[in-house]
Length: 266
Image (cartoon, helix red, strand yellow):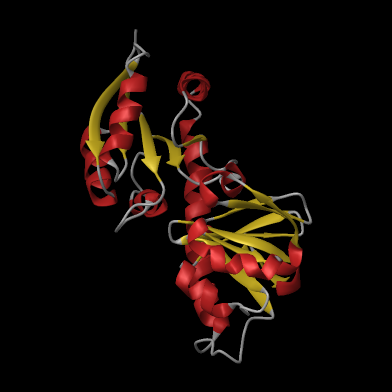
């Protein structure tokens, strides 16, 4: 049986340990390395030349996307993103990565993902897959550079965004801020959900919060901002948290750390 040389990348040692334990159930998986940050991952991928990498998105220093960007021009393995972000936040990446897994990784979900890996390797389609992934990373980088040009000077308290300029392929989408329902973070990238679509920009949470009018946009989680005008229902959840149901039916978790924001909905 041909072994699939596999590298595990996550800044949480317990996450690596848990994934490695689950992978022992698959005889064709050979773990050839474990990395706790992006820099280690880049070196290990170049040295070990794995066929498959389980890659965490949010890591200090180099995040998962920057790891891929740094490897452009090399022979890339297949990548499976591993993330703690809610599934709706990952829809934007679904068509670009081979697959993604939500933490904690479930055995059956992992099994299905490895079926896809084997099929891709057998069909030798990794080159085409990686081309799409590299294009995504390049577009996100271009978005950041374009935003720096179009944004102009820093936003002041009296000058909040009326629209967001987002590069999408070969075009720039001028998104009316009124259409934005919620925004969530994936490392140094922001997923902007508006009018049934998700747009990706390279931006920090701190910067995004500063650009938006707090009278309309409230941070309700360390990785989420919500348009309060779009909230139609608030449901209590476990551990003192709440789930905000939006006009589109989307759901955003409100952390108990932001319970003071609750007053906006009462």
